[in-house]
Length: 172
Image (cartoon, rainbow, N blue to C red):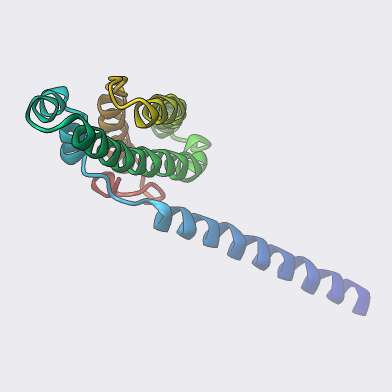
């Protein structure tokens, strides 16, 4: 009888610890989502601005400004990659939903977020090359529309779910 009680208490304790861990991971993922100003990111990637700078400042000043711009773009890409990773973690439970619409929307969000992570890897490479050779123009142009699509899919998933396990689309 006492052994049974001890086993039950240990099992309930293990379940409580597991629940606490899952909940803290979800909260950590929600806190990991940091907003991205896509308008500012688009402005940094604008080649017309770059051409204007190239034509109106000395070449040494242009290289310095271009490297500063590339550095800021790298931080944006890093934030986008982190947000995509957090969205994947937060959408995993929705993918297992019994509601087929929620499960399909979650699968689309996860797929798009994974593609964005891959695009971020390519963008890191391109931007690193631009940092080394400022005269190159290897803008990660596809990243912004894909990230905007991710925001829209997260918004859709949030409206389909009864439990709010996905981040606010405006927050990403």
